[in-house]
View 1: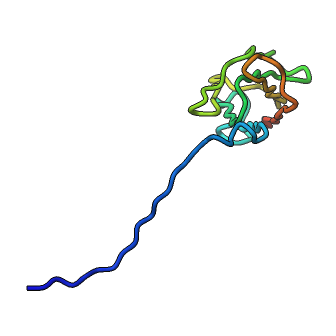
View 2: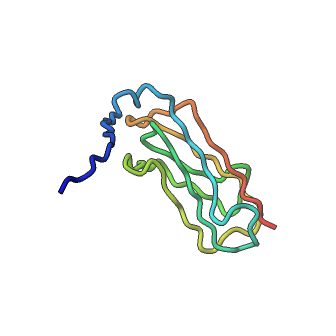
Length: 118
């Protein structure tokens, strides 16, 4: 009994992060649920970064209540993070995400996000 010969192909590939350090840093921020949200409804800030070692998130422009995370490390395996506000906010807030290198030196990149509360 002979079996038919089935043609096929093989794919060989490799992956390297060697050139990633040469790419520019990136940062973005949003919320879940997405803006607009109801007053005092739970909200979570979500940020994504690339080639950024540390971040600091603040409310700017006289937001209420005042908020500042201080400088926090970014998990390089995740490249981002979340921050929950279970009590939400009574009014629209403007957030700034400041970026830093491994040594804590500011990078020339800031991401902003306006959380509209209606």
